[in-house]
Amino acid sequence: MSHLTLPEADPAPGAPLLRRLRAETATLLKLAWPMMIAQASRMGLNVIDTVMVGQASTQELAYLGMGRALNWVAIISGIGLMAGISVFAARAVGAGDPRRCGDIMRQGLLYALALGAALTALILLLARPVLQLAGLAPDLVDGGVAFSAAISLGYIPTLVGSAAYFFLQGIGRPKPGMIITTSALPLNVFLNWVFIYGNLGAPALGATGAALATALAVTLTTLVELGYLRWMPDAERYGVLDRGWRRAWREGRALRRFGFAPGLATMLDLLGLNTLAVWAGRFGAAVAAGFQILLSLHLIVLIIGISLATAASVRVGNAYGAQQWREIGLRCWLASALSVLTMALLVAVLYPNLSLAIRPFNPDAATAAAAIAQLRAFTPFMLFDGVAFVLMLSLRSAGDEVVASVLQIVGYLGVALAAATVLVVGFGMGGVGLALAFGIGMLFTALAMAWRFRIVAARLAARAKAGP
Image (cartoon, rainbow, N blue to C red; front, side, top):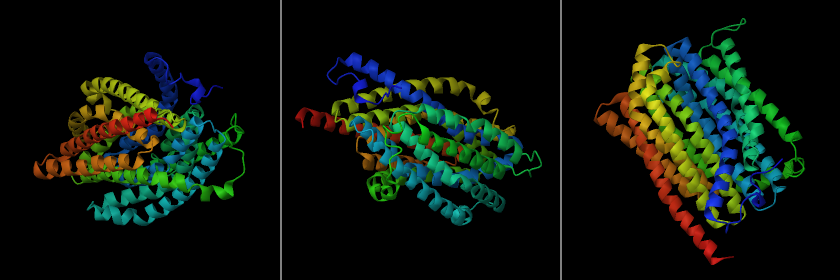
């Protein structure tokens, strides 16, 4: 099997620019398409839950939204803390030291296990007081807490499976993770059918049933993913079978330290987003459910942007490990251009068809009206989200993870919440104001990341001119 990330597979840095662009485009797309399907499958679990719970009732969909607001912060923050796994593995491959990847894998899996246990304890302790503090109605608090307790059963397998998947991404082998992740979708649909609606003798649990189904589906697919790592082709070459579990935690300090800034930024980013989601709950179940539909459609469109961003981060990590400083800028800007082009096409298709796009989520007329109003304000901003992720992940791979994280916090938390305060409190725009605020934070983040990457790329190009 060929390995796309090996330096010898690339044209020499001094090759003609057109040849390098063609080769890099092909490599990015070969990496990105399985990542896209895997991301679609991961996000598809959330979309499936939203659709199937929405068919049960608008009230259950609101419960899901309140519980998910907390749990997205927890689980995606944990994933952000593990950002070093794919970056460090890609750098090791770029440096011509693939065996080092096995040590990175062990460090990442142990870290994921510890994070999963800690986050499970936190969500069980804090779900109720946090939702009560948000000023929600008692039934929304109870529904959100029940959802949180059920979904937390899947925290450890979700993070362990993510660590395994990040390792496979870092070594340029995303296809097995794609296949395994995709297999969770039909399993989740079946388990949702059982637990949401109360089939095969199970109680009808609504949103809580969706959480339980997702936790079970993720647990089973994670076990398969760990089995693949054990018996993967070239396991010996990548050091997967080496011993070293006892020293992995001690030697994983650099990996954990790398992930601190991205993890904190992701947590605060999602805190801002889910503050908007909880804020939507104050305008009633229809607005809250409509905001959840907005988030689901946003995730569907963002799949391509995140996939290109992840592929770009692997390629930038390869160049960083190989000390090919000029290639870092070329690879990131090319991925940024591809992201803008594809997101523009998707937005152009989605915007005139919003009524059709929301139809599967919920049959309630008030929810549909709220969702369409919010999406009309928000959809044009989707153009900028993909490129923001490309630049953000490339900055991390280029060793600038702290500044990238600061800009992420400022944009998705500070700017978004400030805009929401002005639009909702000052102008009384309700759910539409929340949607606009989310988009404004997104636009700011993309522009700030582009400004920062331009500085970093110029600095690295100067290092290349200076020589060793």
